[in-house]
Each structure stands twice: as structure tokens, then as C-alpha cells.
Image (cartoon, rainbow, N blue to C red; front, side, top):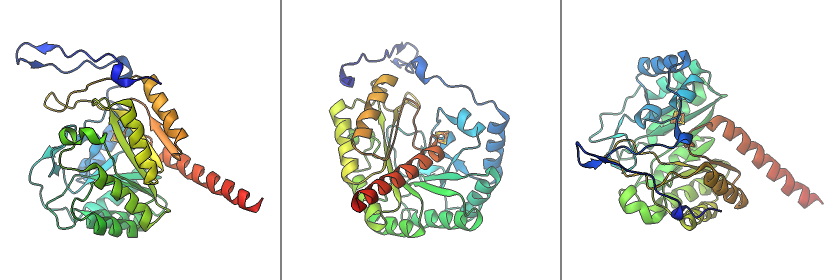
Length: 323
Ligand code: SF4
């Protein structure tokens, strides 16, 4: 197992014009193809026509060419302006606009037109709303169940600061298949990377989902390359397992603009594989760990694997009891 903290740091050459560090050079394993396919353009048109935002665009996701070509997009509800300002995130910060009442139906129309077997819905933080936006998640889930009953639903929510219990309860009642909430980084880095959030509050949210409905799969992810230490990552895995999280995702943090947090390290594919092996040994039903892993990357395929893993585990447990 590599000690990530001892790996060489990336170069950050000076930008002589601005006197600031220039954009960091990405290693070869991060480079991705430009989004030029017809499928990409069709996905883009559909989102525009239905007035839907995607985290794929707002977060400048490196996988957009691949995902949109396959017509996989992650819809970002509750607008495109966030009430928080996390140091890693490219989404605009400010005072959000009113919630779009057509968003739930339009999301369902998009899922139907794209023929999605699995959809991922996320949102900006809406600390300005009395319920943090939970009721809009519920409406989107209900619209999807009505219009595309065979589509499995994965939601990736904010932490609903100050109203977590009621928000999680309402969303769990609506019955998503997967509830994702990302821890994003190790607790030591929260004050600089995720200053508006609390690590243990996010963990509690994940526990709360299982307490409401143990059948809902839970999922959480962290970004690597922000200066975390190897043992801190192992501790996060243990914390997630203590909260009975089923699926962990680990991907490389990429700096969206020079104003965002620096990449402290480009973690090698080998180190990601080693983290993945540790996570599997710790008992997660599903693990995704690679430089380009994102919460929603290959989410449908991963959901199928996770569901099969649970069925196998239950069958093994039943056989043991019967033996
Ligand atoms: S990985 Fe997720 S956010 Fe990125 S393009 Fe694919 S679906 Fe969108």
C-alpha cells in the first residue's frame, strides 16, 4: 500500500502575468476525450429544451463526453445557484431563484426520452428554503415513479443543515432506490474544503437513511488529492461502514479554476486500486475507486452490481441459518 502523503507533489509553475500559480498540469491518466458526439449534442439539446440543469456541466465533469454520448446525465434540481461556497465546487454561489414547479415533470420527461434504466438526481444546497429543498426531491421521485416506473432512482442530496431529520424522513418515504450523500473529504480538511458542513452531521444523515429504511442502498464518496493522509482515508471508510454505507466512491479531485482549492497530489491509478482493495476488505457491497470516478459515473451499472451483491449476501446468510 502506498503512503500517499509521501508521493511527489505536482508541479505548480508560476503564472508570470498574474503572479499566481498557473493551472496544474494533469497527468496522462486524467486526460479525457472532447465531447463531440451526436449523442452528446442530443443530451445537451434535451436538457436545454426542458430547462434542466446538470451537474455534469455545472461541475465541469471530465466524464461528460463519455456519459452524454451514452445519454447518461445527472440532473441538478433546485436551480443552478448554491447557497454554500465549498472550495472544491464549480457551481455558482449566491441567492438562488424561485424553485421551478415544472422541474419534477420535466425530469421525468427527460428520463423517458433518454430511455434511462437508472437516473441520478442531485441538487444545489438550498439553505434558504424552509425544508432545504427536500419536498422538491420528493416531487421528482414521485414524477419519475408515475412516468417511468421501471427506472431505478438514485438521489445525491445536500446535508439539509438544521433540518436533516425531517428532510431525510420525507425523502425516504418517497422511496428512492439509492440515497447518496458525499462526505467529500476527511474530517481534518472540512474547515478549508467544506466549511459550511460538519463531517459527523453528514455521517449521521447516512445513518438516518438506514434507520428509516434499511432496504434503501446508501452511497457516499470522497475526493482524493486534497492533502489527505492514507490512514485518514481508511478512517473515513471505517466511519462509513459504521453507518452501514453500502457503496463508496473515490475519485481524484480536479481544480475547476485557479480560485478553487489546489490539487495537492495526483493520486496514481495504482494507489486508487489499493484503496479500492482496502474498501472491499472492509465490507462495502460496491466500491468504485479510480482517478475519474465520480458519484454518478457508471451509476446504473454499479447499482446492478450492488443489488446482485446484496442478494448474494442474503442468500449466503439464509443458507448458513438453514445449514
Ligand atoms: S460522471 Fe456524473 S456528473 Fe460526470 S458527466 Fe457522468 S453523469 Fe455527469
